[in-house]
Length: 261
Length: 259
Image 1 (tube, each protein chain N blue to C red):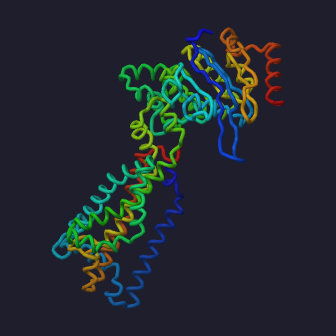
Image 2 (cartoon, each protein chain N blue to C red):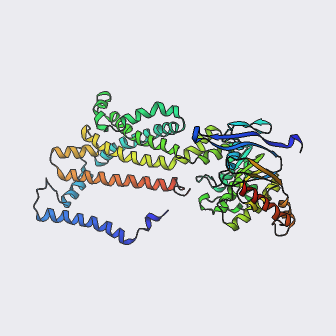
Image 3 (cartoon, helix red, strand yellow):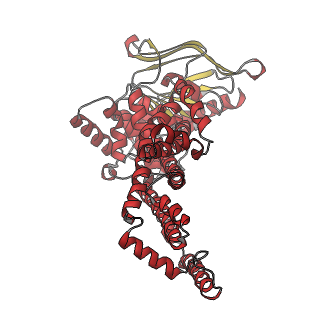
């Protein structure tokens, strides 16, 4: 379980070293090459921009409000996608007739880049959170749904047969066997979906919004505030890592049997 | 044997797969009855359709010809009256040892006091009372198969079907497990049908050994044996092998090899 923590100290040093080198190159480049701060702001400028945004916010909206708006859209839509895609995906995997209804729709819209139909969603639902949450919901739905269908078809047949021979009803087989047996795959699906939804979120906020971390970056670019753009982009990266770390942590806690069957 | 003690009746059962040149006959006109309290060991070379026979009794498959009855009624599918122990234990890794054993009684909707009693009873019988809270994936292969046995027995099924339950275990664990299976059979008065490819195992456990031929699977001979009872009298809890034992073993090996 703790194999990941057992990475040798040398490898950890390499990772930290890589980032120190990147930081060093950045400092040296800005100090000796005399880039204008619009092209490449120095680390110090980015840091002070960060402190300024933390204190005063951006465009009269605090940083926490920007992040909060983004997270509300993101987690709201992932939650909606989970409570719909998991049952529908499992049912599709379980019943061929169910799959015949839903599968082709999902397969049709899945390869379309979400931004392609975002304009339509804005037309129908306005520029506020409604259209964004719908967009992210659609982005997150497909990966979770597909993972669930695949999960059911890869369940050990003997799990289901033995449950039947132990007296489990069809309903109990679904709830007590299929659902937990599919959990590892469902989790992977949710994780993939979250990554995809996050990318879509930033893109959507850049297209049309009045707040959010993606909007902050695109608004700063209009006034050539490169330091603010850097702050926004670095925050996006860190948030993404934190989100993925949270999923890995939850997976270890909730699906303790993964890979040990 | 009296008519009412008959548990399973297989009448002219055949099983075919595929069509045309792809057609294979897995079972050919099998007739078999299992009476209450018997311990039947089905012996045969691999690919002789022993597992198919077991799956038909379990209700996982339906014969293409002939009829299969359980307690006088045609077998329509799996249910808790016919418990199955698989070759590789199919314990649910998301449940603890105790929860695995309690699964059957819980599914049948017994009240929690009864579930607890049964679970504790069978955990004690397989000598794993102190391991109830453990995760099943932390157990050794032999322990897992013991839990799988207890999980089936906790349901008190009329019939226990075992598909080479000891096939994946090492020789020593296997011997201990044979003793355990024999004791469980006697204490709980089960009816067992066990598939094996080990002649000694069949003779050591069975009250009747059914020898099957290579594909297409037919029953070559049914031999009544009583070595398993000698284990209850001996101090070592092992069976006594006399001269007749060796002759029977020779006979069975001859049947399997030359048919």
